[in-house]
Image (tube, rainbow, N blue to C red; front, side, top):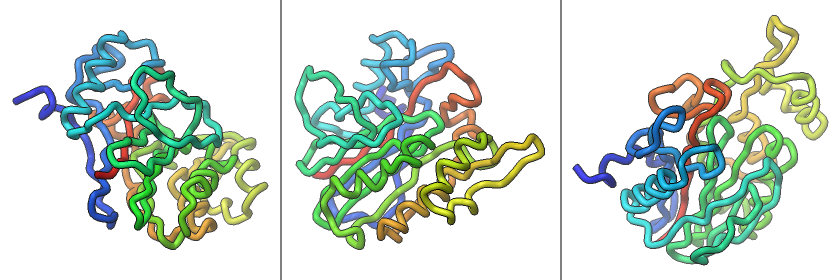
Amino acid sequence: MSAAEEVQYLEPQWPVPAGVHAAFTLRGGGVSRGAFASLNLGAHVGDEPAAVAQNRARVRAALGLAHEPCWLQQVHGTHVVEASHTPGREAPTADASVSRAPGVVAVVQVADCLPVLLAARDGTVAAAHAGWRGLAAGVLEATVAQMGVPPRELVAWLGPAISAAHFEVGAEVHAAFLARDARAATAFVANARGRWQCDLALLARQRLAAAGIDAVYGGTWCTYAGAGQFFSFRRDGQCGRMAALIWRD
């Protein structure tokens, strides 16, 4: 078995146009060790740079990518960039990217935050990093606006993220969402510690629906609970990063 064949990933099951491809990498099939074992794709978490480079090369081979994905420096914000293939360029600071050209791969990294992939009928695709800060601030709305496509022509996929059962948050998170939409109250359940269990996937579905996108798939995997498949920052602290990628032929 080749190194590329060992790479583990999920393929989203969603009705996208012909020629659109997507994947979500799991934690198996790489060369990283210790807390980053084994398919860590994050270059910012303390792993050996050579291991990260080899892991990324394995992903490119496994997915048959012609070019390096457009990696981002994610800051839990709402900035969206146009993905491009420019060898050697510094990763742009953003939390989402839009790809309009064949072979240009939009990608976000996660280890509990929610990755959201979007695809349009015309082949425009996007990837967004939706942790609670970015989600509350409007990263999904900003991504949809950057795509410039009527929302009814979009389909979304929610990748693995921490589930409500394991995502405890404080009053500030609860307040941030309710300040924007009172319906967000349904995504929070008070716990015995005076805090809240927060459902990121439901919050994302609400935001997408408000933006006019009802075709939403995925959102059923918990990174915290699935230690064998997923990295989880809240579970493990120092850990690797997985990637949600989307591109078109």
